[in-house]
Amino acid sequence: MNQAPAADPETLLMQGRERFAAATSLSELDAAKAELVGRRGALTAVQRTLGGLDEQQRRDLGARINAVRAALAELEAQRRIALTDERDRVVLAAEAVDVTLPARTARRGSLHPIHETMETMVDVMANLGFSAVEGPEVETDWFNFQAMNIPVDHPARGMHDTIYVQPPNPADPPGSVLLRTHTSPMQTRTMLAQGPPVYIAVPGRTYRQEAADATHLPVFHQMECLAVDEGLSFADLRGTLAELCRGLFGPGARIRMRPDHYPFTEPSADVDAWVPAVGDWVELLGSGMVHPNVLHMAGYDPEQVSGFAFGMGVERVAMLRHGIDDLRLFTDNDLRFLASF
Ligand code: DAH
Image (cartoon, rainbow, N blue to C red):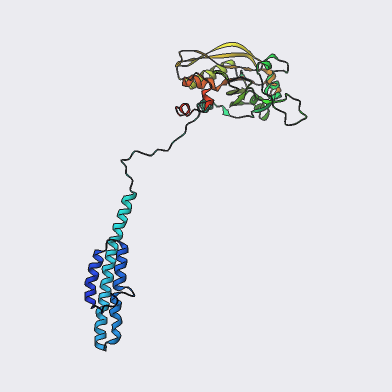
């Protein structure tokens, strides 16, 4: 083609009109443009013949070449706009969202039922003005037992079959450091750290030497509550417990209290809940008015302030709320169980 004698510009204009119109892609258009008006293109070849012409012919042909070049540039630009639009339409159509397809939802996890129950407990207490605090799981004998008015030789200590750990400081005697057997030690830790009034809820993990079965685990959870203020009475304890119980088991839930004994409270009471979903009374927690010795060891004056406290097992409440009959389900990590919450 390069060898062929140069065509006249108007023929090239006709060719260009056809070639540009026939181009179905931007690369075909680029190729046609190069062949017609590029540096090695047909129109440029005509231009190169100008040198061999006389003045008048040169001016004449030059003007025609310029006119054709301008016309071709215009045609090429228009076709380019059309092809670019076309390409964008195709790309957008391919990327378009089909709103009729089923949604691809993210696979969401859910709270473990123990965690969810603990959060619910803390929420109910927060609505009553109690702040949530957490404490160490590795505890000293003093906070876990002695400050709770459980002396070294008290039979209650035998009751907690305690898991002891090696004291980090070799100067401390064996048996002085342990995994806390209840959340009660946070009573004294909190009172030592601040003055009255105290309104705290303490969710957390607790440990006892137990063989695992349907109703026992060596690692379990409790929530402790402590209120210390001027003039708190047993009526405040009862009202608080009734409210907590309704928060956990619904508006139809009720409580009843039975006298019991705990070294850290005087008087002490065990609390049963009427759980509507169960249709029966269920033993729920231990409670009482904070023993003067406990207040005293925490640096509070039992003549100035009084308090109430209670401690409840979280697993038991979770089982009652969800109708679960085997504790071990909580720790098996079976997704069929966990995904059902
Ligand atoms: N600490 C007791 C336990 O683990 C529960 C308890 C009973 C806590 C009475 C209290 C209380 O604060 O007043 O069995």
